[in-house]
Image (cartoon, rainbow, N blue to C red; front, side):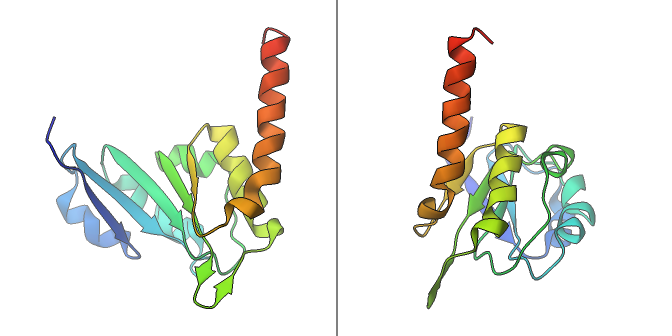
Length: 140
């Protein structure tokens, strides 16, 4: 395994196709801020890029976006980053954040919350942890 990991984040995933498949120590991500349709970002080219780790960065999340666990699985997403606008600070409304968090939970994909957005997602994560603990107690 190589010593270093290289992380590429782009708003134009079609530009990465020329290097696909990428080396095992290269992670690639696409920035989705809500102003460009998610399906255009994921299914125009990002879904065809081969990389050991592919991720979506919803940072800053500036508008509502449609995301479900099927989108994450179909595009082979392994990680999601969620962040707010920082200058000036603008937290995304719960109605925009909740579907992203629920899709990650359903697809069992890790979610990194940045820029104090954890305040926004905490209720959903707490609900999921409570549900998981109940399932463990019931032997599921």
